[in-house]
Length: 296
Image 1 (cartoon, helix red, strand yellow):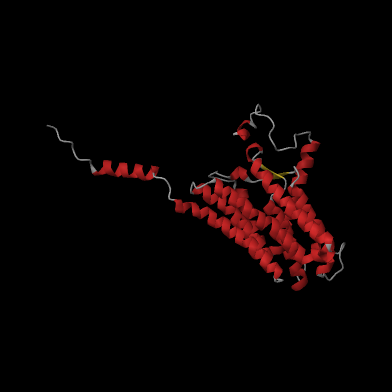
Image 2 (cartoon, one colour):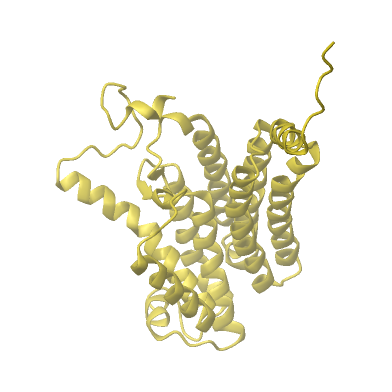
């Protein structure tokens, strides 16, 4: 009678490793990406509270912190393989607060209130456009060219509004001199600046940011580098230079960067129009090789 030979230690170790590999992830790890989303939501809520208390510089910092956290939650979910429908919905609701309601309310408290009904109408238009932008993003995910955003992304729109508030706050309270920007503002307001002088400029920026979110203007998404092991060396140098510039003059550089990004979509749109290229980034055919994967 043959007795089964005992398993060797190496064989047992291989089976244990395979079992651990196929073992379902603990439910606790799904909390990790949602913690980043909740932290982003807190940044938006914090911005609203600070604006109500007249701490506008902290309100804008809260919005920018929300931007950073919002860019991390999806990456954390992909790295830990914890993507879920719940996380997607949570992210959209958080974005609505942090990049929809918060910038609108901070802008209203900062400079739109003196305009009366025109002020809160501008704030509402921005808030409504953010909601429409997020809803459209959710339903068009499978049919949009991943290289571009359809309309100005809500975090960039929030940064445009918050950056203007942060920069003008520093100019008014800290006598912060920005010669080129002051010359442009001087066309619409008297110098030295007062908050009431900025009402119509804030009105224009709020409407521009809000309405651009719901256009079909293509904005580069920078997703071409996602998942790549290597990136061009010049890009790395450029990132280092931008970080250095932000540390020197945070309000000026950040507002300038998002102004350039806000205008870049229109430049791409005009460039494509003049070359006779297709402008819409929504795929309408599955016969084209470049569009086949957009419908899966």
